[in-house]
Amino acid sequence: MSIKPSTDMRALRSRRWLYAALLQLMQEKPFKDIQITEIADRAQVSRPTFYLHYRSKEELLLSQVDLVFAEFFQEFSNKIAEGNYDRLKYCILIFQYWERNAETLRMVMRADLHEAFRGRLRMYFSMAVSRLTTLEEKTNSNEKLQEFIIDFESGGVYQLLIHWIERDMPYSAEMMGSLFYQLAAAGPTVKIAQ
Image 1 (cartoon, one colour):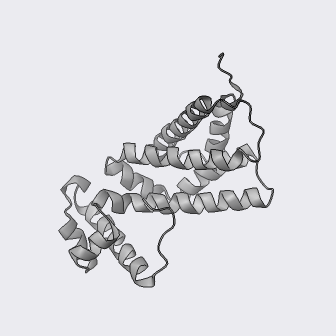
Image 2 (cartoon, helix red, strand yellow):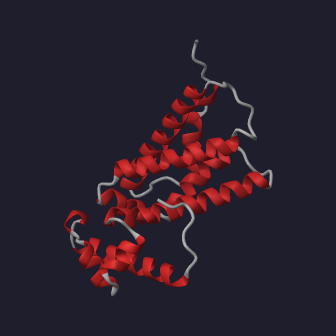
């Protein structure tokens, strides 16, 4: 899984074609029934071209999740660099990105790639926490506690996203981000007795 996508135009074009082919096929049949050969044929590329870019159809689908996260993390990092960061804005930004990319998340859900998506959420939360530790005063230097916080927050966002997307996003991204912020507000202030 690569966070930084290739800038080679041919590679980008092939990846776009492969993803478009996968989306078309997912409209016609269940994800589990789709074969790599079908994806390559529909994209009008060879099987070796598919394998040049992806190891599996799961990786192809999840590459779109990685693109969303990479864009999010770039914007998040820019806001930090500008001094324009607070936790509430961060929470809202998460939901704004997935509101704009709801179809990608729906495809991941239809493909039953929940664990892989949750793992990516955790990885990006871990990256965000690492980035923030230089900005925010650490409330507890216990690294094990930090891991629990990352698990709690990434798991919470996962559950809220799934619930929200499954119900066709009845609330705004701002409301969802604010809800997550309120639910997670006590997380970093919790201390575990040694």
